[in-house]
Each structure stands twice: as structure tokens, then as C-alpha cells.
Length: 376
Image (cartoon, rainbow, N blue to C red):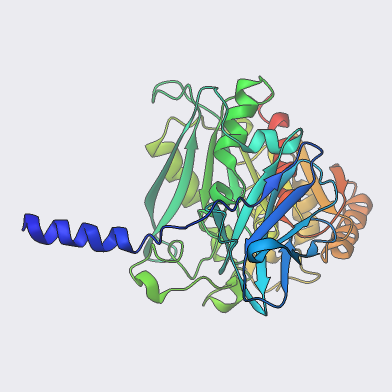
């Protein structure tokens, strides 16, 4: 048995693919430009495709088949990118750091000196992230959620809770991996900018029980946009049954009860969910955040969750109703129409408009603005 295990270990080590040479990519320069270096000696064309403004960067071939190029100055953020080598798009072979967004994996890097400082690990007290399952009577299944517990969590003192919801195609890992929630919360709390809180991040795809690869389907369930998952987000089940998540949280964690100790917020599809969760559970939340909310002009009024919207809006009594969106977001117009409705109905809210579109850089920044407003 020992010989078999040793042989298996050797075979696995061979699969690592040790790399010759000393190519470093990306290189974040002192002036916040970023240089990419890709070893592709047989390539005819190499282009970096990134999520920054004007994020198409053709590289030029140099000595030894190293293709290089440098961006303009980039604002502080976490950036994702891929490399196109002669029409084949993949990861940067010199960068071991990757993130999955829906069904695509990206290489990534940080540009420091601003927002990105909150997204990284610093020498501050660290919270804990746990992933656990709760039973949903509404779906007849067990469903997974992620929970951030603040550094001072000891199971005795009770903490307020932010329920933070992902977007279409995301899952209970999205805010952890792409939103950098544990690092953001650790750093906000350490700086005294946010009160210690629990952050609960459920899976909002009611037709799936957990993230791809984490369900009983194992690898047969592949990452897809939520409109391709049976029972997608427009049928009201998730919003109507959200009390199951609250009850589970308050039973299994040291979560403070009552409206004043609860907030709900979400991005895109999660913004849509957050709105209707708040409207249909008016005694449950004192803080509501819509981040680039995936609103619909006319949700199906035959579904009780989506009926009598105007009346529910006028009855909503919260301490903070916060709406944010980028001015290039494809959902910008419908969010402005929603603001007109709120103004006509006399519903108070705060509005934050950023630049750019439907991007994680905006949603992380919105969380940085929203979380410090909670439970004070």
C-alpha cells in the first residue's frame, strides 16, 4: 500500500508541470500601470482581455518569444483578465492566481492605493467563513449557504446580520470569491468603519441546492446563468421562503433578532430578490441595499410575492433604503424608472451612481459604502 501511495504521489507531482524560465506576469508597476509577459514563441498574435476601461491590450513579441505590453494607469481595484493567443482564450500561464465567475475562470491581480487595499489580507484580526446546509421545506431539499463570522465571534455575544445575495449565474461562493467579503469585513471592522456583523450568503438559484460541483449531481451540474436553471429567480419561491434562512441563522449562530438587527442586500438578480424579500417581510429588515438591481418592469402580478408592489413600497418602513448603479450598466434605465416610481410614491431612499457597468468592481465598492451604514 505504501508503494502504491508513493507511486500515486509521484504521478500527481508529475502533473504539476514545472515551468522553466523566469517569466513574471503581471507586473504592477510603481505608477499603477501593469505589464503582462506571455511566453508564446510560436504565436502570431497575443492579446490581453481585461475588465478595466479599454481593457483590450495587444502585446508585442520580444526576445525569446516573450510577448509584452503595458496598460495605462489603472485605478486601485481587483482586476480580472484572460489571454488570447491566436484565437485561443485562456489563463495567463505565469499567473497562478485565478477566480471563477459563473462558468469562466480568470487570472487576476490587485492595484493598490485605494479600494483594493480593503480586498487583501492585512495583519488585523480575522473572521471565519463556514459553509453549511439548511433544510428548505419550500423546496423539499437541503440547501447550502456561506456564513462570515466576525473576529470577535465567540458564540455567546449576539451580532446583527447582513443577508448578502448574489447575481444571476452566481452561487453561495460568489460574494466570498469574487466579492472578497471576508477581507472587506475584516478590514472595515479593524478600522472601526463597520460594526462587527455576521454576513450570510445563501444560494439564490432556487432550482439548484448549491454551487456547481457541490451538489449531489457533482460535476454533472455545470456553471450556467440562472435563467438556464429550472425554477429560475422569477417564480417568487426564494423571496416567499426567505424566513427559512433567517430562522436557520438565528437557531445555529449567535445572531441578534429583530428588524433593527437585520439587513438584506444583493447585486443584479440578488438586488431583485432583496427588494421583494424586504417588501414581503416588512417586519424583518431595517436596511435594504440594491446593487445594480435586476428589476423587471412588470413582475407577474399573479404571483403573490410580486402583487400590490406600490402598496408594499409605501408600507415599507426602513432606516436605510440604498440604491446604487453604474452609469453604463445595461440596467441603468430601469433603475431610473424605479427611482421615478419611488419619488411619485413618496418612498425615501438614498442613491449612489458610479461609473462603468455591470461589474464586480462596482459591487465590491458598493459593499464598502453600504456596510459601514449598517446597525448604527
